[in-house]
Image 1 (cartoon, rainbow, N blue to C red):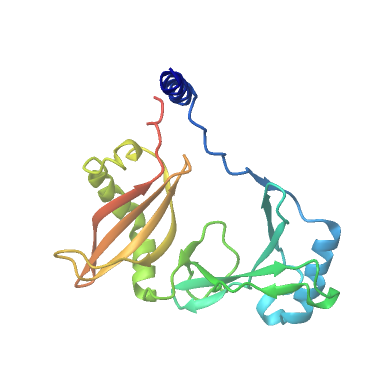
Image 2 (cartoon, one colour; image 1 turned 45 degrees about the vertical axis):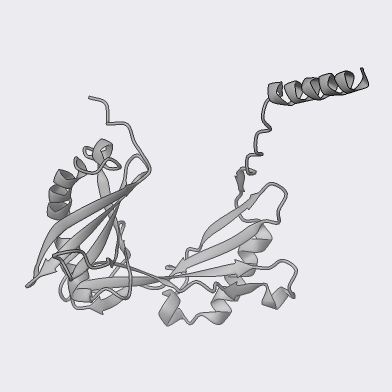
Length: 241
């Protein structure tokens, strides 16, 4: 009799466990953003003007830090300031600004609260006008230093035509088909791994108006460039109309 009761109890317990809904994993805390405090802004301005010479910063008229301040849940705020150098000729055909990031530590001594980020500075380039001093541009392209400047110049010149040809490749890629008709802007030029039949490759990164991103691998052969393959991140519904 006891054995039957014990077996029945086990069966009821197992049934209860089976009926109970599976525990859902906790979603990660959402990212919180905020603007810099007056103290953070003032502290960085003092630090930057003491550390960076005017010939690099461009002086007060060019100094315009951008702050990226965020945290998850109750974690400490991560405060980063980014500054672009004064625009200068990188080559006769390209202007360049160098973007450097700085990290804030509120617990450090007052004169040591800002330090350069461990990440390498980023290069942003645009086509230069011959014999004209470089000035800040509305649209720039992030350039990986590993890409030759001649390739960068050529791809910026030809990016619209290369994107038009790349759209023909979108249909054959399930991750890109729905993005074929979106509007894109060239955001970066980077190295691309060799591909079968195309040993010399360069990568172009395009950002869409739907917050998606497309990478176009471009084949270089005897000074000519051709869209070779595409990959896409994110998804987007086709535009209405």
